[in-house]
Length: 280
Ligand code: SF4
Image (cartoon, rainbow, N blue to C red; front, side, top):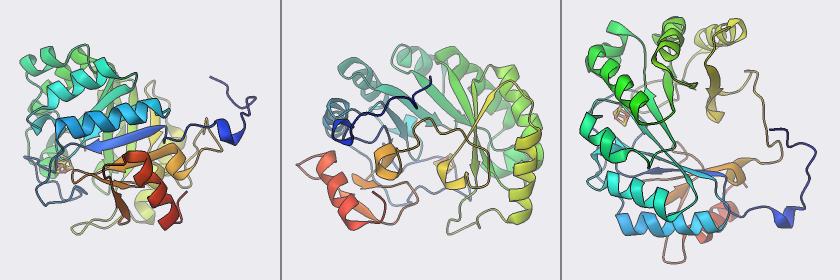
């Protein structure tokens, strides 16, 4: 789509961010070192999530992405997805580690998911050392997700995985993925952000990439990478926000600043967050 010839007045712009990610739960059965999910136990209630989704839908949000923790471990995950798809116009997506995608779960989710993402941090032994799970189990997860909906592969790019981007993009193509999302590693309490050597290797890989699966990159890791921005005036909280598993709205899952979503809803919290932060 070419949108740059349309310039609606700013008062006509949607008040909601275009995309919202929602951590349904902090619970996860894996222990990746670069995990950014808070470790305190918290999960969102179904009715709470649905009321936010309806508000966001009415205010012009286009899509929501469920994550966590591991969203499939939320006890009401299937019902939340079904209701999100059935009771709103939002595009419904989720991100998973892929090890719980049984044929039964895939069957129950079918028809409620517009796009899914599976995390593939390296191949073979690299994957197993980073995620502590068998690579063969991940391959089954990729087969399952391909059977559910269009899907993309997410890769945390760090000093281990950067050397395996060719193998991961081959896997993405063979598995039928339509997107390879690069997530340059961000600092957590356990790991550092990528250094200049890894950053340069990533930039070189991207500029030489000739694969068929389209590339995407997280905004936090996009600097110095060639990106195509379809909405150049849509920045910060106009584009994206994150709701954590405690019901706090943030500019991203890494952002320390947040506004608790109260009875007045998501847009009210968004306004408070805008007023309190540099990010508008
Ligand atoms: S699978 Fe995802 S949520 Fe779970 S520990 Fe790893 S990075 Fe964190």
